[in-house]
Image (cartoon, rainbow, N blue to C red; front, side):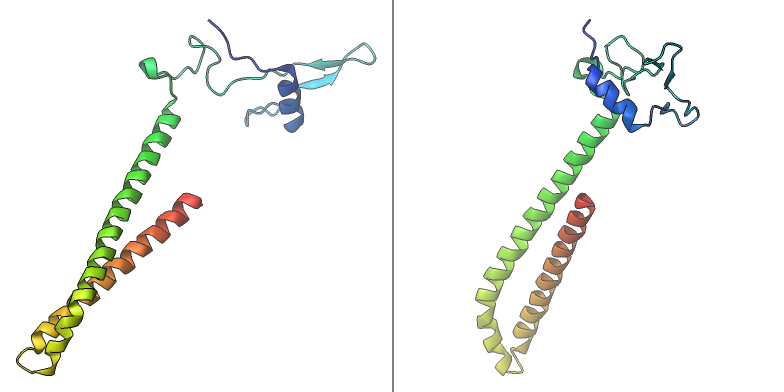
Amino acid sequence: MQRDEFPEATKRVVAARVAYRCSNPDCRAPTAGPQLETGKTLNVGVAAHVSAAAPEGPRFASLGWFHMTMAALIALIAGLIMFLSFALIASQMVLAVSEAYVGIGGGVLLLGFSGSRWTIKFAEGFLGWLLGVAVKLFFLYLLVGVGLTITAG
């Protein structure tokens, strides 16, 4: 089996970034130091993978043929849920906006009924419906704003 090995340059950069100390929070021992011969150093640090470097190695997380870690699978599912939520909100917003345009265009005729006390209920009903559509659009825009803030943060 082929292993996923680190290049030497990557090992040097990673060691320098942690000040040549063990990255285990319980250890933090130095991984480099002087050697008996002048001009040489001793390096006992080992570059370790977070997940296995080979399919039979330690910490190998396989989901059958899919070879994906559990964290990646959870992130994929969370992303899919967010995408479907935004798609549902977008479809609801398209319906509400088109309902508002068509309703306002035709509802202007109903406002003419507000001149008589016998037909004022038509105009009042239209204005109530219009307020309901406005509240629906307000909350849809609020959901989009909160969702964008959460996903961007």
